[in-house]
Amino acid sequence: MNSTIDILNRLIDVHSSSLASYMQFASPWVGVGQDEAIATIADVYEDQARTVKRLGELVLDMGGVVQPGVFPMTFTSLHDVSLTYLLQLLVRAHQDDLSIIRKCVESLEPHSMERAFAEESQGNAEGHLELFKELSQEAGV
Image (tube, rainbow, N blue to C red; front, side):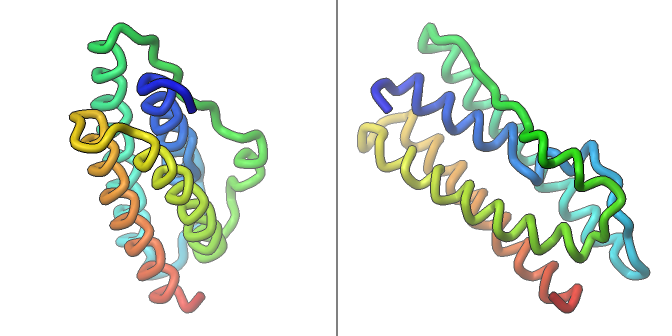
């Protein structure tokens, strides 16, 4: 990654095209007692949307163009699958996303406002991963 704007756009891409973000459009099969899990996932994608908005505003302030990501076509096959199955996928996908986020953070100039925003998005992603792991354990995965 060569410029700060490119790195910030990569972060925007990761957050905006994540499986967690896609869940706002999916309709998984939800078992008895899993309503709280669905609500938690909704909180995560709303949090990711706020992160995308903040990063996008930063890109615009720097004179750049915001380039959000697109969802992979494979996500379209995840409608009507069980929430328990989706939780497994969310953990794996979020681990992959977190790896990319960490690389982006490391690529930014230390002690910069951009890095501070990126570190905040990393901290949020780490918290989201823990939530997904807890939900998976509660679902017996």
